[in-house]
Length: 122
Image (cartoon, rainbow, N blue to C red):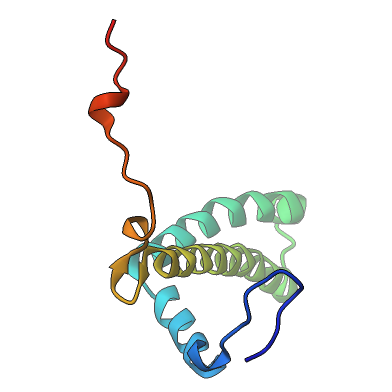
């Protein structure tokens, strides 16, 4: 057991998945259809805006060479990667927060409210 910062619970490294398992999980999650489509839409939108800002005059003048086209391609790749990374990390956080040992986290140690008694009866 490793001790964390003062006042925190000790870490149990034996319960933490290996780095290889985390990378495999990240890659599998990043290939989910909704994440890929969202990233493609964002890359198309943001990449087009950035390409026009960065290469608009050269594109309109018709003087684009291979180097410029490579830069335009990379202009689309970067927003795709950023969007994929952000969506994948968010989905993994959501998955981790949703369950503990197969049980819904929201059901663990939360006080049950009696909503019938909290209604304001005027």
